Amino acid sequence: MATERKTSSLRNCALRGLLRRFFGDRKGATAIEFALLALPFFVIVFASIETFVAFAGEQLLANATDTLARKIRTGEITFEDSSKPGFKTKEQFRQAFCDEITILMPCSATEVNEPDKLYLDVRNITDLTQFPTAVPRIGSSSSSDLDTSGFQFTPGGAGAFTMVRAYYRWEVITDLVRPYVTNLRPAGSSMPRDFLMVATATFRNENY
Image (cartoon, rainbow, N blue to C red):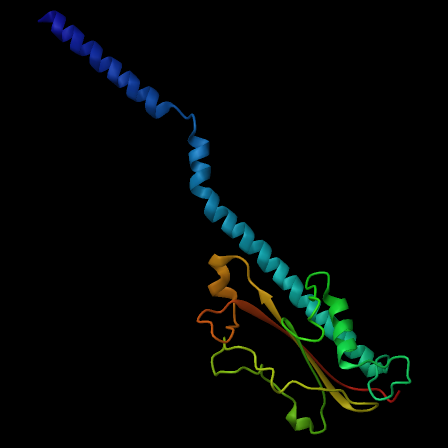
């Protein structure tokens, strides 16, 4: 009987020691913790980076709009007389705009002639009460696709009131944050996919 009790006690001690060693062993714990936390961590990192880059893209678009608007205002870029050194066609003006944003928003080979991401609306405003104030959309929803049917390229000459509006479709890459930051749903799509960047400049041309 004493032998059996002694054997049982030894077994219990061995079992307790095994359990202590099992729960006290930290080998592989770091790998397991990393596996559990890696996905949300990298999602946050990628979302933060994408938000930062998108913000930089918005600033770049605004700067490009201001730069080209200033050149129109001062007569450095003109559209009426092809004999002037600053004369540019619609395609040449789009190319000049692409050159300003290429560091973050490179235009494709066909972007200048067939807009796909960058849309420009340049027009002479004769009635100052008719300045557009809203983003033109195909539908009434705030995420409806951009309506480009009314876009013009009719810049004014010396002393004219002119408006330059630039729109850029910024594609959101991080899937998990896309529903929260996108505001442009392409026609035929049920889910917003792109973030629409907008920059506007209104001014009166100098009497150059």
